[in-house]
Length: 295
Image (cartoon, rainbow, N blue to C red; front, side, top):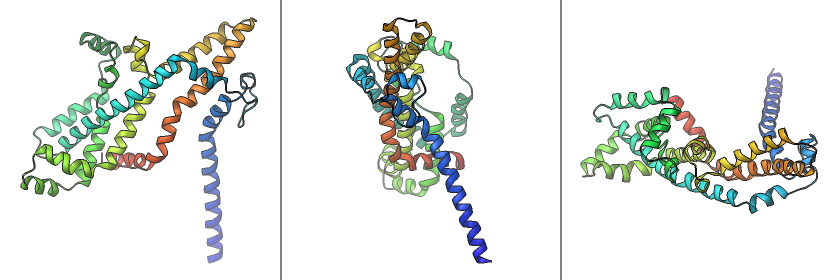
């Protein structure tokens, strides 16, 4: 009987592992295809010959990207917006989360409900654009950093972490020792909140790096636009070329180059996040659990 149970459990584990392996391959296939297509012959990519492995090694797309002034400018701008924006986002979110975790904060429930209201309702794109233009934020280098400065969802995560992981008695003991609110926040809350800080850095960093919609609407100067805008332009340009392409060799060559640059730029744009994410994955999972269990 024990052998029969052991055999059934072993079969079950093998089936589960096979299913997980299949799901992993399905999830990884788009990434594998993009990497293979970025170093393959554009003609082979267009004809559907590229599946898993490259066909006809070709790195012209990467050479064109590295030579392009605007790609380098977009990469620089994206790095700046990601680093500066994430630092400011995390700072403001931590302070808001700490304040809302304090039970002695007057009107805490009203403030929380008022902030959560913005998660469900907004003024819309037109109203937001008029406000941004009226207060002088249109086409400024700090526009993308100020807009979306705080995420209510992340504030709730931070509040839940502080109130559930840091005992109130520690804060009271620090106040008895003569610490002010700023000293409690800087000397007690911050050192004990490293997991949630990593979560916030990951959330905000991914958001800034992948964001393009606000830049498309509020940034007119190409010298201020992030990398995702230039990626979008290449994708749109590629579609336009394919739609208007005729028998001329020059248009065909441009279309093939745009096809190669499209996949190459996707790899280059995704590379930083692909490198950083494995190191922060455990914090990402913990952040999801904080929001779902204690939020």
